[in-house]
Amino acid sequence: MAIELSKEARTQAIASIQRYFEENMDEPIGNVAASGLLGFILEEIGPSLYNKGVADAQEQLQMRVAELDIEVHEDEFQYWRKYERTGKTRK
Figure 1 (cartoon, rainbow, N blue to C red):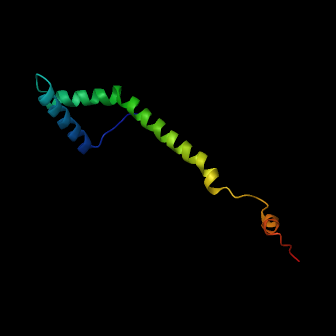
Figure 2 (cartoon, rainbow, N blue to C red):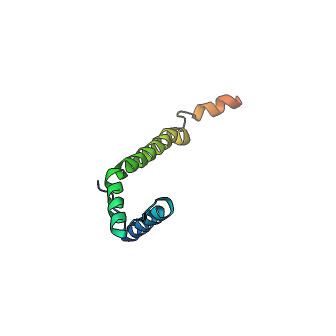
Figure 3 (cartoon, rainbow, N blue to C red):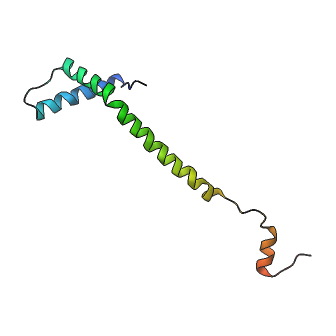
């Protein structure tokens, strides 16, 4: 599954890459080069980040599903127990 960014997100990402280069590297990077770098990152590294996010979401969902039985469990055959606890009989 290819990772696609919206036009707005892509524009912001390219601007962010350019700013990073201006502030942290010896040479600035142009718009075309920043766009190419972004494409490389999305294709090469993006799937690892995406897969990690999916795995984290699955783990959270599995924990919630495991807790579901505890949250919604109802003991069965409890009618007579309420009378056993009070010592009363029903007639």
